[in-house]
Length: 231
Image (cartoon, rainbow, N blue to C red; front, side):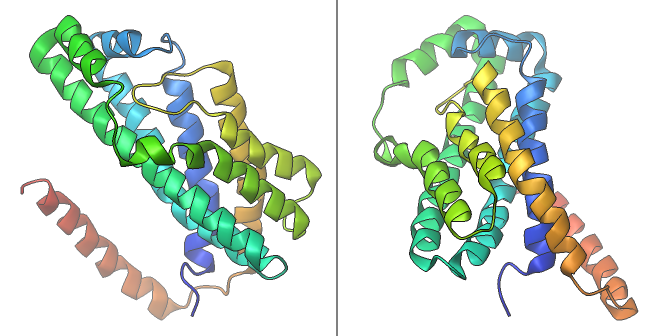
């Protein structure tokens, strides 16, 4: 059995890019740099929380989308698949790390106010950490993945270029939306969503037993998710 299987990979190829685009669009009304982002958090907390949460969720889901794409590339171009998979996955880890810092900054805004949180973020903005040395993967990995997808025949030239546009997304802490942000997330949707639909259509129809098993599993996972917030 492959992991992720077709159901997981296909769903991720559809859902992940859409979440990235939604998060990008939700924060698009506000200026790009972090003082303006923090001010927006103070003035529109629910909207900004939804925007950053959607973008974070998109990056988390994209690991399975990338894994599914890499599996297909690997049939013809295993070396391209290996390098692309490593680089893009590490880049996704980097974005999740940045999202953790974003959340801490949002919390600081509630306790210290906009000015106090801005000073706090500014004081530590250039601090070195593991992903300071790996930030190139956040950009470069998508170019390698797009090249591998094209060379293996998984994506045609137009959709390969659209996938490479993901490398245009700004990286770092508390980054808002620019024109290139929208281009990048739309590009990921153009490249991945049709492939995800194709993968899902190739999967065998779920049996009654599969459906009956999925319901209690979903309920159990939901209960565990609620319990996780209490710890």
